[in-house]
Each structure stands twice: as C-alpha cells, then as structure tokens.
Image (cartoon, rainbow, N blue to C red; front, side, top):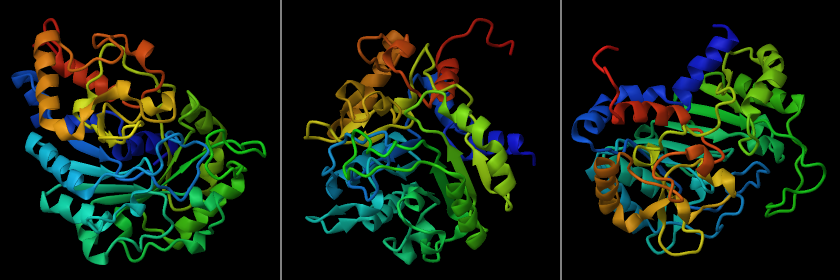
Length: 369
C-alpha cells in the first residue's frame, strides 16, 4: 500500500475522523426517526496526574490533583450504559495508569473490571513505557491500548519499553512531532524542563521500538495540536523521512489536511462521545462537549460543560428536548447551535459533526440521493 493511501485508510481506522459513525446505524436511526441522540463512546479522564510534561499538552493548565472518586465512576458508567453507550476510552487529562482512589482502594484495574462488567468495549490511552500496572487477567477485557511515545524524548530508550506480555495485536503507538522549546520550558510546564523537540533520531528510536515489537498494530504520527494546520505541515516535512525508515509498514501520518476547524453549521458530538473531566474550579466532575475545546485555553472551561456527572440522564433528556424544539441539542456562548467557527478555534470532530448534521436536519428531496 502506498504511504498516502495508508495515511488516509489508517486515519479512518485508528482516529476519530467521521466515517466510523456510519457503522452505528442504530444511533443514526434514533437521531433521524426518534429525534434522540444516544452516546456511543465515553471519553473518561479519571485522573489529572501525569509523569510527563509534554510541551504540546492540550490541558497543561489543568487542576493536577483532581481525580474522580471510584463510586462516581461506577455511577456515570452505569448512567451512560442506560442511555446506550457502547464503549469507554480511559484517557487524559493525566495518565490513567496513575489513577488511585485511596478511599475505595481503586486503581486502573478497578475501572477496567467494572466497565467490563457492564459489557463496555474498553480502550486506554497512556504515556507509560510499561504496562505492568494492568493485571494480566484483565488483558482480555481490553480492546486496545495506545501508548504515546513522549518518554522516548524524556530519557527512555526503545529497550526500556516493557509491554508485559500484553497482546501486541491490540497495541498501537503514537507520537506527536513538535518543535524545540528553544532551551526554555513551556510557559505552563510543571517541571521547568525544556524539550529538544523532534529530530530524525527521535524517529529512528520509534523505528527501533517497532523492530523490537514488530507485531504492534500501528504507529500514528501527528502534528502539534496547539498549532493550527500543523498536521499538514508535518506531513510535508516528515513524510519522506518516515517512509524511508518504516521497514515494517506500521507508520502512518494522521491525514486531516488543514481541516482542524469546526463544522460551522452544528455541533452534536458532545452527545455521541462526551468527555468526562474536572471542573477547573473544583467540585463535581463535568460532562464536556469534546476534547478539542481545551485547545483554546489549555485547560477545562465550564462554558463547554453540559453539566455535572451527577445529572447525566437529565442532561441527555434536556439536550434531546432542545433538539426537538430548536433543531440543536446545546449551545455554547449563546450561539444558538450555529456559527461554531466563531465559538471554537480548534476542532478535530468536523466530519463527525457534518455527518450528524446531515442525519439530524431535513434535506430537500432527500429521497433522491
């Protein structure tokens, strides 16, 4: 497969970029026929602790000590399952491998086991160079794990990575290409550590890691999400380097062109893949519309919250009632569900929202496709 074709195909397979929604005809039918949005996947950030200090972190200004009590996790997963959710992506915020609720004596395994008991599909995103925190008896409960390889830039070598016998056919790797911080730390750095940025040596280390673990599913390369249009720029700059070094045909560059801006006519993804993360001021964890809006301020923002995790069922009922009455499920900054390019600077759900808009709105002569 040529690299351009692979980039497009793998972006659809292993990124949230629109077409996967077409596999969920039950949800699309519910939107069009019953005028009711159902969640498909829950993005759950159980802790804000992290053992890296990425200069491209989208939530570098987050409340670092926050975590969700385990009883709250159980309730929100139960509520979302009642609404029809199919999967949970355990992600950041911080590094979910570091999750601990000392009162409940719960950790990442507790979340995996409870989600599995509710028959959720489970994915995990982490930056850990080892998977030792996950019990081996829980491996069969997990659909996939994706590891961000930033620790290769923080002193780890490819030989240091220990996947602890986790099935490599369920393991993906990712790496953000980024520029040097110029000998000074990022303005929101917690460690005051400058980063050298991506070099050819960085890519060679990833290739060595693949050589040591040739059965991993993929290595996803992406640009710095804090810089608009950066995915296209890194594709143009780094494609030939990656093509030459990709001996096992595992690398792909996230291929979204310059489309990192919102779909202007509507936003619906908050009811399909809500993001659970902290209230930046303390208090209840919140149900947010997506993970892209944080790029505006590099932290959480209550203007993009749909409400408290204690009120999930009512949130969905209210949003769906809004949709029936006004044609949009929610609004941000009084935008009446439109003109999203004025509301949000960044968006990695443009095509998801375009599909959902097409399904949810009446189109003239729709029976003549």
